[in-house]
Length: 341
View 1 (spheres, rainbow, N blue to C red):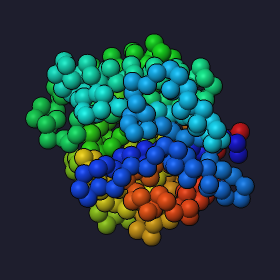
View 2 (cartoon, rainbow, N blue to C red):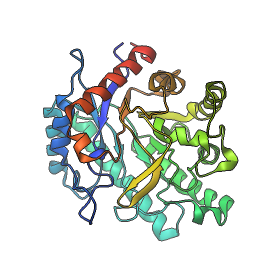
View 3 (cartoon, rainbow, N blue to C red):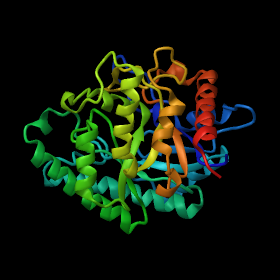
């Protein structure tokens, strides 16, 4: 199988890293590229990378020439650029999609900035596939719960404006389903947001195996749990199918990952789905089988690549070559089982 292409994410070198006490330092873009380039399984290597549009990997105010230099660096390591992560969060460029007019304006500014960088990469020839990823940028669900209907409506309005901006730039946005983001913290409310926006050509869903596993457990929304702790296989797979049947039609970007049923956080990114090594003995997911539920008819939805997400792996894990070979092997297995020519 030659499709989908296999990408590695660059943000595990950034997310949860920092200079504060107890934090590990970020890993540079070039070093993350080198770690990715060194991986090889039976002659197969990663085809590309998905890329985080913020410091220290990217200055969002970088000039066109500086961005072309980044594109040259990535291509020089043998990679295409795929999906981009817009810096929509408070403390980066953006702010809450659920916030006041000023906050929502910052959110939209982040989307505009991401579209600008995407255009430069596209025209340069370095970026050949992928979406621009967003989320609600409202961390935690307590504030959302104060008036769930009104707050969801605000997120929907912001996402509609963002989707219009993206469409005008020839881009598609993918909202990442993750239990820590308000209004996106469970499968049912995520579906309500997607249907509320109602612009599938411009805004879809990004499914991550680690995060969507916690959707089934109803971690931040017990009322929408599809299975309970201690479930059997006979209970899990019909529940998983129910979730994927609802969200798969919206899914335009896909992360291969493993999860052990726990939440994890580092730095200012806390209480989210824990990403584990592909062969973690505590991993709950049959990665290849789970991926098949999301990748059914994937080509018809415009999916051209899949990406590994090892968000918040310790630096020592990221520095270990076997980490990347194991990951690459699991992605090859997914493609061999569910790929296409």
